[in-house]
Amino acid sequence: MAYDRSPWKGPLEPGTLALCACGESSDKPYCDGSHARLQTGKTPHVVRVSEAKTYAICMCGTSDNRPWCDGSHKRLPAAD
Ligand code: FES
Image 1 (cartoon, rainbow, N blue to C red):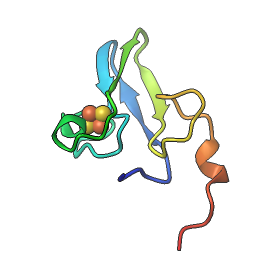
Image 2: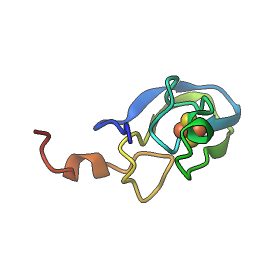
Image 3: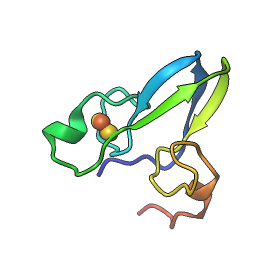
Image 4: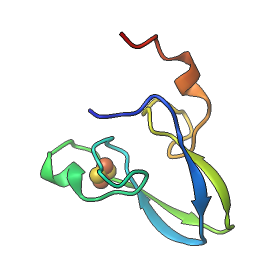
């Protein structure tokens, strides 16, 4: 898995989005179909964004509120 240690933060516009849940997308935070190509067993988080604003999206895979960041990345063990 290619999860990151920090969230993706940026503006999202209203609409329906497919957000990467497997960590393998080359277009994070969006799903690019890599989950199927690599047979990760994951499927994207399909979300309806109703408000244009800045969002923090979990990229570490440990948030209890995925796809949204809940700060869990701060509790990850230190990288080697
Ligand atoms: S590429 Fe990661 S869920 Fe689709």
